[in-house]
Length: 254
Image (cartoon, rainbow, N blue to C red; front, side, top):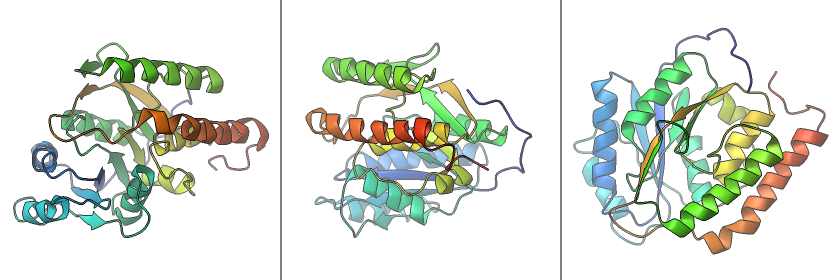
């Protein structure tokens, strides 16, 4: 793990980026809970929810939520769709000097997002949560998905020789400098969840790991299709692995 550097200037604004595809049922509680957590801690923020080609009332629900959640900043992804493209769209529109990526289904804890903000303000470039370290917690995790998750993360950890054991989880936080330093993003789908943190690590940004919690969605259906993602995860891991060992540090943080 990279060593800490002198603490930079305090962060001023936090962007919470949430991709959403057909999430009309989940979004009201997700957005309100995040807003309440940020307000209670006096964190200047925006909640950037990206409607990724939804066919239900997701966009209408977001317009209704704006009436009671003043920090909500909904965006429509008018280009090609996919989880990675939606997140990239949200990162393009964010105004903050730091961000976190959260899921629309309320599986991620707003309290953990607050903790991420504090860690970034301690001077870290990245805050990576893990559900599988002491203090971490998962609730109602599907067994097959859990098995595949642990196998995939084991190979990522061994391949990159890093102690992080939950790389595939999207819920992580970054300074804007990291996001800009890791562009361009190649992953159109869920493989973006590994592209950003692995690029950040390989390019020399500082990072720390903290326990987080996760709970299964209460509404809607999961968007991740495990059968479709194997080759996509392999491709992006191989791409960043080649950068790590063969780029001669051309892309490292300066």
